[in-house]
Image 1 (cartoon, rainbow, N blue to C red):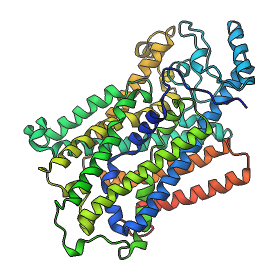
Image 2 (cartoon, one colour; image 1 turned 135 degrees about the vertical axis):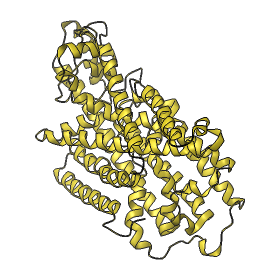
Image 3 (tube, rainbow, N blue to C red; image 1 turned 30 degrees about the vertical axis):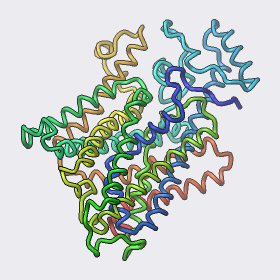
Image 4 (spheres, rainbow, N blue to C red; image 1 turned 120 degrees about the horizontal axis):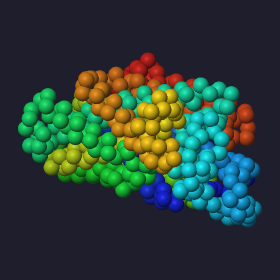
Length: 488
């Protein structure tokens, strides 16, 4: 088997950059209910549940990352077996020598001939066989992994595309609503508040959509690496603000609100809290794209990246919840989220609200990238009339321009759909959260267990893992619906 295939030179992301992208993808509006989850069971059971969530997230992320590595090796070997151009002979000979010596092989970037409209196509794969793959990405999408794992059941990857589209649309709708609420709570600091309701809400949604549309036209998810630094920073800021105000007793607490190691009826609430803890580390719509851009990926480096990111996020979540729980105690159970317990004049949480709004604005395009790939893999543009297809994407002799235009059209459309939903249905957050919980369990647990088939040599181990994954995902989905345990 060939050694690890490095990423494209343009999208060669360091360990820190990839970890930052994972954290930015995982941090969402759910961070606000984490202190409430701890208040529902106590700080000792919460530690176990956050550890479990980090373990599940790290393991499934590692599986998907290893599958990316495996598919790229397969693609390289397929291309070596089937020469595409006679002029590529010398290049392929050098690649053979590199593989035999276990040196770093030539990347897909080196195999391209951008100025040649007949340049090499990607190795055969049912979902997408176009020059676009070499121009804009250097590895498989989440759907490609699922398809290769279930070659006799193409409907499985189509199901993933549908789940991915529905989940991201619902998640982005919640992001739009939360960003609007965060800006509106800034009071006089947010200029659009002077227009009053409902104009403030509408204009704030439009403002967020403008940024989301622009950022979603970037060619790869790695282009947001610098902006993604805001999300971990905001989480640190929020945790620091909570701990500072707790340690300096900014908020008085009566005896009935004191925190407990184990609260009454904590076992009945445990399923819902476990559900929150597991889903809090969900970044699986983006981890495949991030793994593609990881610099010099190996099994060990991908293992360290996956578990370090997962446990770091779980640790940050726990300390954030710990500070909030010791500040407000059982009072958290009666509040929608922890930020509402801090006044609008609080200087620290004014900065937190502003930071959360900005980080979720960045999270919108981050969540658009994976569904953009799924939509493009459906090749919907090819079903349009030739004249319309040419007018939208440009001449067939310029595949790079066509790929760029397709990115832009699909990306902007995927931002505008949740924007419209957030304007039309303002009070559907609870319904969206329930639906999202069941969809997350599929993408975070079930589909990675399916992909495990590609890298696991033992059928017994794979079937056992798959059955356990389906059972655990079903349990979490039932808990999110309130059918198992007491809903938090």
